Length: 379
Image (cartoon, rainbow, N blue to C red; front, side):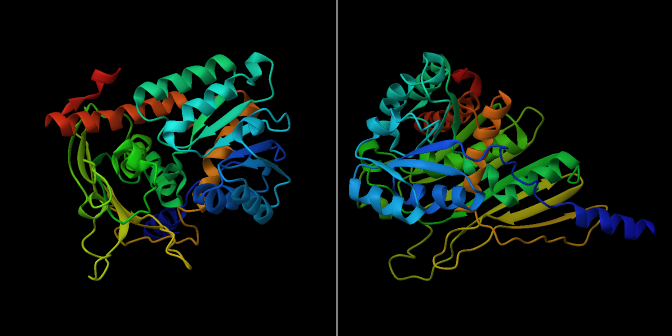
């Protein structure tokens, strides 16, 4: 094999995401608190495809819970979440409730934790973890004291293009990272409970991007954020964090930035739409770019990756069928179940997520005070 052929073969072996590791034991009883879109169309779709074992479900609407249970062949429906938490066939809780309800559910779950002689060994919580960093700390402490292993559903880490990018970075294919960006032009479906909170993007969408930057590049020193209301959402309720721009500064000179634009132009008011989520990483030895697959129903858009290096300057473009929603959603639960089997801490542990929550809080503080905020202010 010539040097050029070797270089080409090596390039083609890169850019493939590491497979998501599943637990040896697939029959762990999972109890689902919530039956909305995220649970019904993402969690349970991914769990069934992987052979996991949801055994019980509940929702604010019992009829909705029964509808989702029938769709996903879940035998037990509880009329309220307290009954599900107390159900001894449930070993792991999957909590998909609004953030201002999370703490109450976790406080009740702690009564049944393994450390208290109960049946609950693990808990997967939605992001954001509580309504703010203070509640996130309370949730982490409650689970720790109850002997419950806590993971947080920061599922963008498990999108295949992001995992493939991490592989390129770990392999040194891109050299030393110089600049990374995420450009989101999307119009999410906001939840009614957000009006109670009075916030829109930073804790709902930006939190994914901030966590992904942490996953790929580690901890920044400081962040500068600028926000303004989204004109469309402002017609529904008052908020500050509609369109969010932020820059993360790292000690070694690396910079990461994101434009989280949930207005995306008057695409709902008659103009043509130009929507999507793209990312880009530039390093001293190469560059990678990708897109995050969005559930454009009915067909959807798979995530993508393209990269080039100084050693192999042609573009390499692996492709997959998977999308962020719902395919990445097996990652956080599998991560939790594997950690329970091995007696370790999940990658998406509550303790780790406190740093993501702190980064979100730093963005809010930066936007309010119009200054760069060092993360040590939240240690």
